[in-house]
Length: 124
Image (tube, rainbow, N blue to C red; front, side, top):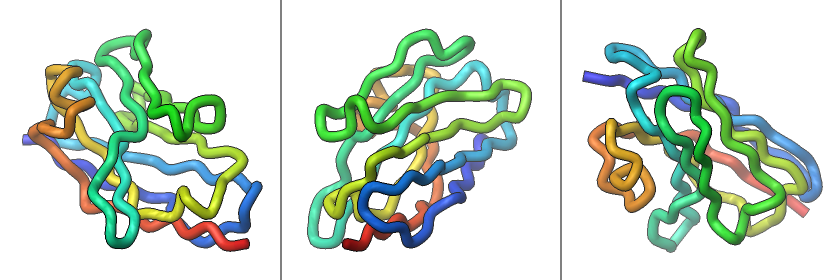
């Protein structure tokens, strides 16, 4: 069983940056593809970014965050990151990390493992 714990959320102003972390325990971290989803108030959960397992050589981003967000992983620290730059009001959401041995499952949101979420609020 893999346990995921997000951190790093908070209140920021539009245009600022924030880095989210997702710490994993209970499994072989490098063997899992990882991803980020978010859910804004009143909206469905949506895909944000994903990174392949092992070296993380393959990344994918939603069009809405491409060029502003960067996903990365540290297999020594068993942690995944989401660097968020140039934040916009519409980035306000609860951000969830997920993990699964299969990258496709991470991307489409059927991953086996999910964190509890961390709230990001972007103000004007």
